[in-house]
Length: 170
Image 1 (cartoon, rainbow, N blue to C red):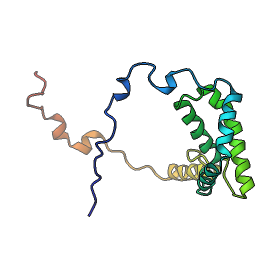
Image 2 (spheres, rainbow, N blue to C red):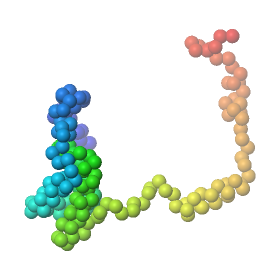
Image 3 (tube, rainbow, N blue to C red):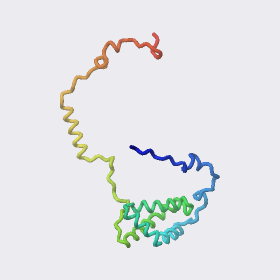
Image 4 (cartoon, helix red, strand yellow):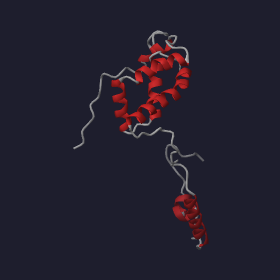
């Protein structure tokens, strides 16, 4: 029997984020690190910490791409008010290279997340050629007799005047 999901009443109320005073959120304050160099000095010691490296390597072994981890770190830094979005984007290559260096040093295979992905919306040329061939074959077959609306519905139903609440008056 299907289990019904329990409703969580611990979730925030809709619109709750709009009820605080402007400036109370960390990202609405001036950033703690305003330059790229300061932000790098913040991230490098945290990435080289033993406990953080163990967790980082576990996540990489699960197959999470390096770019996803780096993006999560920099977005978290923006939300905590550590740096601005633009500084975060400029720090991203340094974070990516540092994570890759840590993984290489540990001998772990990882995915950078920049590999070319197969676009599921793109149709291969062989499928297009097959569809065109089928269309040509179908076109060369004798066309079936097309039926008119009167033949499909019946002449009596087409000529019978409608009556009722929404019928037009004559």
